Image (tube, rainbow, N blue to C red):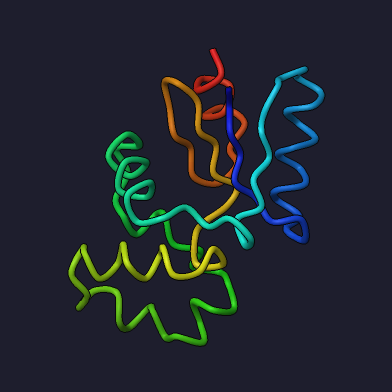
Length: 117
């Protein structure tokens, strides 16, 4: 089953879920704030995605700015970054689409279409 980590107040998440609905795609919606992926899950998703770890951070989020992560991330180890991501769902870029064959971070129609084939 396709899973989508999202946040109800996020407009991009709303657009992504509406797009999935129009595509008649079945999915499990997971509230990223209430059920943040744990460190093990984040490590697996990162490995499957092929993306740099920085792409998993919600760089436009308030918490990211409050923690001054723009300055701190470059000096953090990968282990520290995974622990930080697992500590609060609001740090994780969303929506996060997980299918059998792909992991997509953020909502880009072309990427999601390819992931859902």
